[in-house]
Image 1 (cartoon, one colour):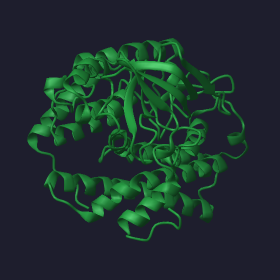
Image 2 (spheres, one colour):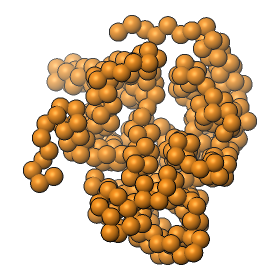
Image 3 (spheres, one colour):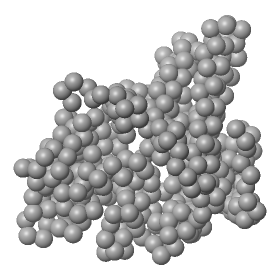
Length: 411
């Protein structure tokens, strides 16, 4: 697999990004062993989104007419690479920047774009995703949350579950059934609903480490304007598939790096515990390294195909298998990490300060039973084979749509 040959304009853009990061990240950020105190971290988190917005880096690939910088593919690759190299947070709000924002760009009305996109760009409005329900997880079309028109408003009633960061969100983009008599995948609409209103109840789901990133959300005649349907009434399934496509997408040249860095930490644990001479441990570490390099090569292959503007059935198949591939890898390698940690891995001995979780790229505060960074990553990895498309469902998709196998009996 050849290395990328970047055009001169992309390399010039790289210099611009690198200079901006060096000027705007805290003093000492690039020094080995750099750490921030709790108050310093809180201040950084508070001010960083404003700096990103002022620099024009939030949603920089969006068209200029909607507040982005209209970056080319090469420029967007370089932007992602430089933020990854610096270990700097790149997004103000994952659900806004990466999921609902691009969905509104593709499906929204001009009025929706003018109302919602500036709020996402400024990082001042936080979003969450309201898709999964107790009886509609892998079978998303089985949802029971309903919305009925009452004059100029939709009235929403039902329940969502595993709603990440709902407690901090100002809006939720949710799926609701707007035509109960339509076939299963029809009669669903994609609504933009304010979270801070009567009729919305949020119940945190406390995890074993004391964190509560996931939530149950109950809607009891909550409301949103009639015009806040994205993609048209009863067209929500198609719109949602677009959003899930954005969720499963990743940066071609950097997606493997989060796992690579984490694996380096796991190898160091094996060295520290004198386990690198064990042939079984060496084999498992080598296998993990191989998978990470496959991710790197697959990312480059996808990027080459995109840049060439051609269709490649093999690359299309990668798109169908990618989420299953990395999520199952991460689950397995985190089990290896806990094994290598030995008794230490069973003790919660972290801090209650915010931490970056490797392989996730999100920050969280863990209390009152704090886990260290690898333990927190282990806990989160248990969910990764479920959210964004359960591994079992992904296998059915690959079998039916990529391999052309018959559907499951009764499907």
